Amino acid sequence: MANRSGEPDKMRFRGSHVFPAHGKWYFNTREGIDVGPFDTRGEAEINSTRLRLVLAKIDDPELARTVISRYTEIPVESHTDLRSLLMYVAKNMRVEQRTEI
Image (tube, rainbow, N blue to C red; front, side, top):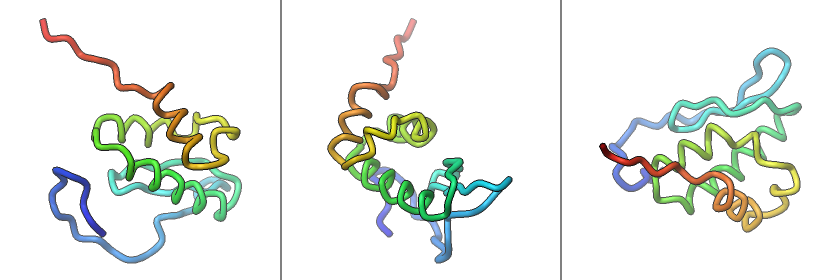
């Protein structure tokens, strides 16, 4: 698997990144962030793929982390297709500008 721009090489392990916990399903990102809960394993797997497709379009690492940590806040109606997900991210998940003093 290719690294994102600026990421160091990491050792990758084959295996499932979807896992159960407390009666729900989650998935783990390469950043080490657990995303969920989802009711079924299938939902976790589908959402893992959706998130991966969204992240492939994001060049800003800070925005990528914001999207990962807030992914489950995205309304269901925005999950109909990749374009809808990207539009929601663009409108609602901007990284706040920091000002230096």
